[in-house]
Length: 394
Image 1 (cartoon, rainbow, N blue to C red):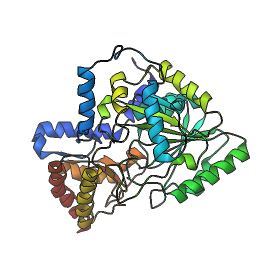
Image 2 (image 1 turned 120 degrees about the vertical axis):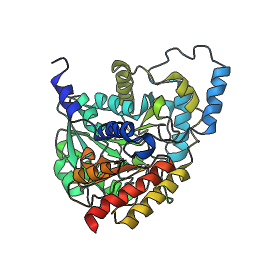
Image 3 (image 1 turned 180 degrees about the horizontal axis):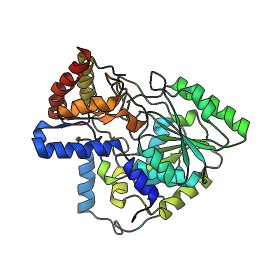
Image 4 (image 1 turned 135 degrees about the vertical axis):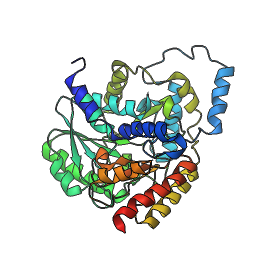
């Protein structure tokens, strides 16, 4: 064996998202790209806003001395200051540059945060349905993951959470708007979560951090807004990126923000900055830092995603699919018309439609649809969705 047994095992049980994407590539080769409707990968087709290209062109025409050199591991002071000012404006708490660390996307942000917090064997609680990579991120840093199941609204089962927290619980990782369901956790849920966490911290005499993965925070619909976690959890950290709100997924630019009210925030920031270096990220991409510094009030046109959501939701529910209507992000999570969603997904594949099984997100019996795609793909998939469900409901 040439690779570690751990990595070999993780590859074999790896992301269903990638597996379906790879199957889609084979189908496209066989039937032609225009005849295959791949809704598996959340890779936005939207281009960045015009302001991004203006900033990019300006930097190319007016390069600053040292533009391509290293900077402090936490990122440029000017960029962190710009983000802190925007967070202060949006959230209403007094953020400063020292509360921010620039990162290589939200994935990099989560990894350096977990590396900072976890000792071997510490537990991190995740709520299903969850982004599948969370499991690997936790295992990367010798942590153990514990899964809390949802209720019928895709909110975490609070009774189960109460029983799952132990003396070894170091963090709870939340994702709202959620990938894959598109659900946003309401204020009353966060309040109840806070009560449970506070009770358990007193019971076990431990500290429990809440890490909020928020790359979809600015992509919300129907006037629903994401509650600010800093008002509910004192020991709270945001990990986010501009992959979705500025359509910069391939540029890997994000940041960490820690609760400015947390007494020991400087120790956490020092650890995160240290881990940014020692995990090999070193620093977030320099040019992207300069660009997003001036784009903190800019977002892609969210109405584009809303129209795609409305189109898919109406058509699929009219066909008989049961779907909890997404409030944000650009996914929906229909219930499979049969118990084993893998069997139903095979029927969709016969129609050249690719989706991701729910078990890849911790819940069987559902599947994820990405609708951040071109309209031709979305419209083209409808015939296959209709044909597949007709085999089970008629």
